[in-house]
Length: 386
Image (cartoon, helix red, strand yellow):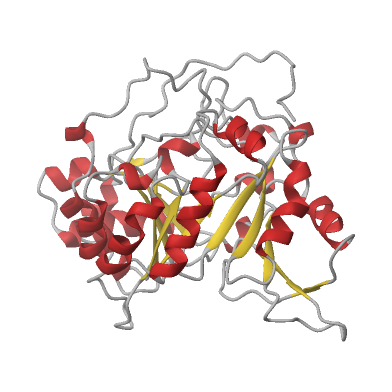
């Protein structure tokens, strides 16, 4: 199928809003915060997950993330000097870990486009949690470069990958990535990642009505019985460049019903606190989970908000800290690092920022408070990762 033909006006806008300065209280003797691994925000949510965007570039032009109309040859990408260096990323990540972060996910853009990404992974893999355990170190990719990099990523210390795959039909997939990239090469990357031991692998499918919703069952058939976990994601209103409309969202409940029309499923308990995906396992004839058949996941950020358990912070490519995927502004940590701030200074700043966090956009979606003041633009997914 092709995209809806309804004309759209995709705004030309500043993709990278100005960074907020560090809270002044973070530097006052009586208000300084130290890292103890137990940081909580204004709603009692602990900081456990850090998403790090390592590049604002991507070689795909998926309409729901980096539409070609906006991200064309004239788009002003960040200069290399503006990017956080690997040493700066590792240092900031270490401070987050001292506050209780247990999982780091590298994102983009397409993170495998960042030159020598393996060197960053090697550095991050040396970090230890406050319980002296290795971090859960993961990476999300479109899979286009995975076949050639999988072994090196594993050798550098990466534990697992999540691959974006929006359909198995080659025509549908080429249309969605909008650069005519063949689906067979992504499938080859998934196989290479599995062979390299980067698992369990998660496969993310963004479902858009009238575009790839007919691919739901073929995707289930392909990955049922494999070590991969297939997850269906509701098309989200991140940023403004993707021309999001609610009528293009396929609710997770409808996805579930489509799958249940062909396969028996049983609901599974979350593996970890703050898990975004609702888990469903394939059932055997006794109605119990058949572990050999595997499971699927449903990520319902539009129709079933999970803000109440969100434990994720996001660090942008040039060092701005965002507390929500739907944020309007982020705090500038790069300036602090390059001005000579100590780790204790950074820990205090991050502590003040997280402890004051009250974000719950998905719970407020559709209200005036969710959209902010007139003219305010939310940050784009391509800028801070999914």
